[in-house]
Image (tube, rainbow over all chains, first blue to last red; front, top):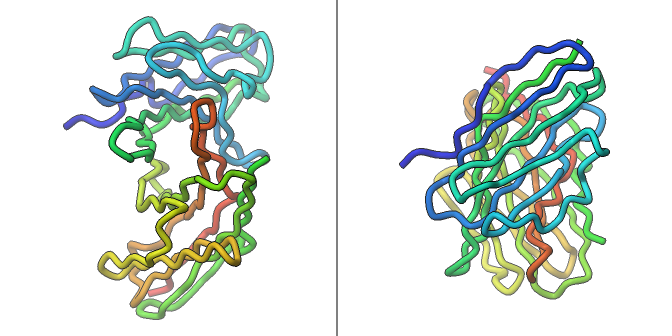
Length: 115
Length: 116
């Protein structure tokens, strides 16, 4: 079975540009999470969805960040305009909380560099 | 609020030695879930184990074992006969039960280096 798929794997952009990160969760999973990893702040949750509906977006840094999940197979995280402090690795994860399983499976991450 | 503490920032051991990674957690919920993830140098996050708060049985999987003790709020991870491939950053994480509490709260990680 395919795991969580993220694209692109690497993104280098200039400050002020729009960045869109993409995620395809594991088929059948009903939760999708976006995390960010930095040296300073470690792994932190940005937002998560249940059945395509945003549940908690309290981790989204500011209005420059937005996330959507138009269907069960696809989610995007958009940063507009990007800033150098957004440089980080962005992980998408999915899980299925039925039948007592709660672990989240992570994609390979997108390494974003904003210059 | 939930919190996970991994006090060991970095550990180095010689290959074949045993090593234990510590994890202490805080939560107000009586039902919660604990996890360990491995992040090798390639960068992906690999799920290793989940433990439910109502199941304090220790678990062994090959060279890996986990010791869950609610009395001390600890969920420690031991690698027996360590190998170079075990070199990675290991994260302990906590999730509470109930709708709206599904996020993972991670510790800061322990960087384990196995010296050949």
